[in-house]
Length: 407
Image (cartoon, rainbow, N blue to C red; front, side, top):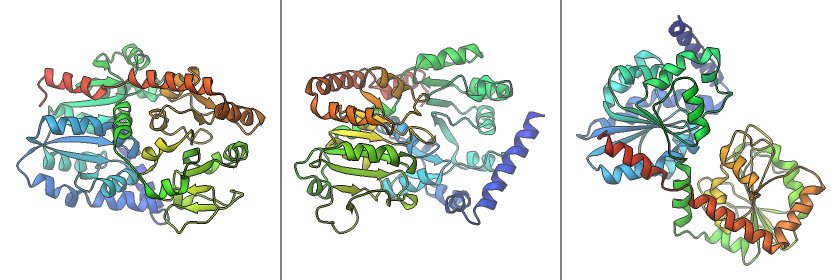
């Protein structure tokens, strides 16, 4: 009975996206991307190598899984690697930034589409990142005896697995060969519903941000804009962040430079900014102290230039990646919606990340984060310790895979 209702629900979901594609560009890409699956997998399936399949929802999950993918590629050159995405934004990002990677969209979670895909690529193993548990996909992989793993898994009590209607998906978790989890709370929750095929290793995002931090990177546009000024960088910001950003900008000394990186620039309104701005991709506006980063792929690397950072999403759907700036050991400001993000909860408790609102307390905090040198030194030390204590996660996963002779 559940399988019937699930199929109806999935088909209704796909139908709603198809209808939305008439006016919504992202939905249109979603539909077109799934039509392009045969062409996208043609090159990799025409080779002689067996395939290891990585699946990520979008950009964030790709960044999360990429350190392990690169490690396995170096250790097992006899295999080819194929990456699938649920979201058009993830697919577009990797196609542009990593053009040599073999990528495609994830097939619809219905038997016909999945049978075709699995039969074509014949994966040696499948690695899913964070939340990507698809009921029918897991079922077919299990029936085909294809080893399947979840990495950087993270579970909360409000997830549907722990509700009465999540019982069928508990079986999906049990069908996975192993779940590599970010923290012990997730393991305890899974044990409470009988899912014991787990190991706590940490979050592979730590490996990714350290890798990015160690890259030799320079950007002449950013450096010419900054000169020798201290810099405030606000990354992945939404319109809901504008009010508090106004307060922060007003609180910064006039000699500070400001870089704003919208989460989606095409839909971002900059009319609220009350002074001159300069756009990264356009001719420089003289005397502007605010730079709008209207391009993709730079944010995680330019955090190295910051003296103070803000990470967006905390006034909206949820906080974006705070590990990207944290790896540079500078204080971070966020909005109040962060409780679902384990690293944010930990760093707020450590007083390395600070929750801000549109009030006078924010102005006072900004002054402290600019002028209180012992306070800043303590933040740097705590961030260094926190980051170093959570590294080498991909190594731990690779050791398990090697020991159990998965490849």
